[in-house]
Image 1: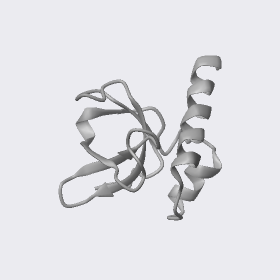
Image 2: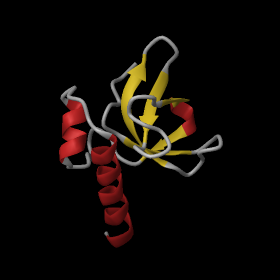
Image 3: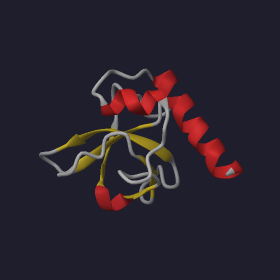
Image 4: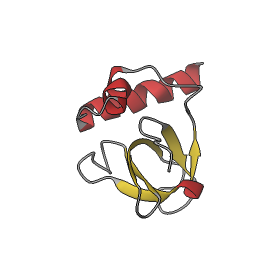
Amino acid sequence: MYDYTGWIVRATAGRDKDGLFCVVGVDQERNFLLLADGKRRKVSKPKGKKLGHVAPLTDHLHEFDHPAIKKLKQGEPVSDRELRRALAAFKEGITLG
């Protein structure tokens, strides 16, 4: 499975439908993306979701340039606070831009 770490996605199914998340890892065995938003889903206990149940808002061609996202892609640990701020900045960019 491709490494989707650092992508920002919107959930399209389940109780967290329309929620904004960041991919913090990939479960290769079950083919799940590990999602966190820093509030309901912490980085220490991410939500597992199938690839078909999310809609990517960023990808390898259209990356979101934020220090927390860069840290994730480099494999460094990211705090929930950093992740919340990155997602808030992304949301602000969507509504204003």
